[in-house]
Image (cartoon, rainbow, N blue to C red; front, side, top):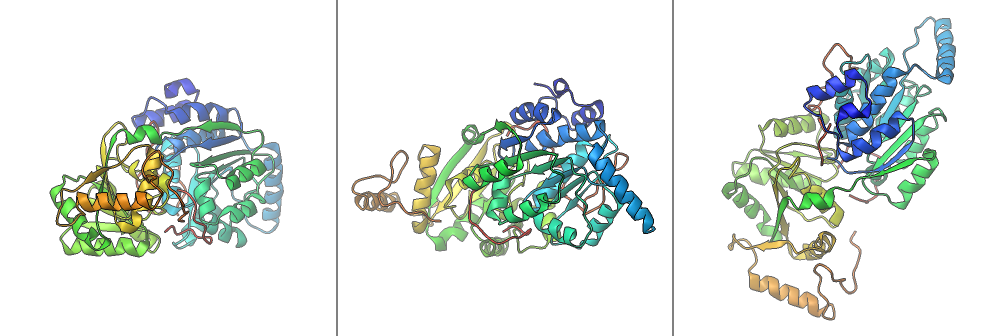
Length: 471
């Protein structure tokens, strides 16, 4: 289906066409009409499916086509009278609130609203921690229609009296499962207490654990369900392989691959923040220009690293899983799993960063002795064995040693194999900126470029305390 068939307003269609998009993705086709009807939506969708445009486009349409609701107008009138009594002017109240887990995702969603709403008299701002709050406070005082925020910083500004959410008509929760992982659910419930009871609510999550379904049940009213699961088809376009390598040989193997492989843009995943810094240090010692992105980096450093990677100035970006959430960069030729994740779904999400928009990609994993169980779980999920590579014999384990390890594993499992289709015995669980306006280019405190996921077709849990700075 084409965007012109979705009954969006002409200024929005013009903005979409300017970005080069004509055909809507499946999630856009299903979601946009529901949002235009005012329905609550419970969506199951991954990054890379065009999800941001699926909610930004219809929300922008509704904001531009309607005035404040009677209840909102009455409350605003009361607030205006109170403000006048105290000799100050009342600011315009936000009508849409978007909550998401990380700074990078907040910036990209804000950029999507700015891009698609550039021909509309709609204003907005992005609120996140790790930076000076004064520019964000100034934009809120000036009055905005759309607030995109991470829960922690938003609550801080609410406690200081800088945020008035009584005019919100639409609440959007994006990547709700990741907000659950990061300990934001209590914050979300506290924020929602300050919103009007009569509102539209849209909740999107890659997975639907029990806690997310309970949250949805408490926040949504008779929601329409939208399910988009693109991961399995994406895998067909990714050439997957694995090196069995000792932990001490991983640095040398990575340097070797980057030297002999035609890499246009590589995303390297590590398990920890310190591990990411260590890999960057080791690569730089061999002359590789690379940068890291994780929660211990300052916001400016993270934005600079992402900007350099997107622009092609840096060809290798080393990242942790949480910091890479929402990262949507075209042209990633290689994904390298320096550390294998213990969550098979996260592996699928990682390698889905390549082979976007009909292109092909390469995913290479390093597996040391302690990670063999993780590899077995990944292979069970994807339903096939990942091809083993031994083309760096000085660094990798021999086929004989791999076979011996498999045999030992099978013997220890009463003959059962730890590879696809077999269940292992005794299995253990391892566990901003300024407002944008129609007459000017969007500004969000030096954000990354708009995500532009208009028509592009395209982790789970580890609880922690509340934080806006992702790992």
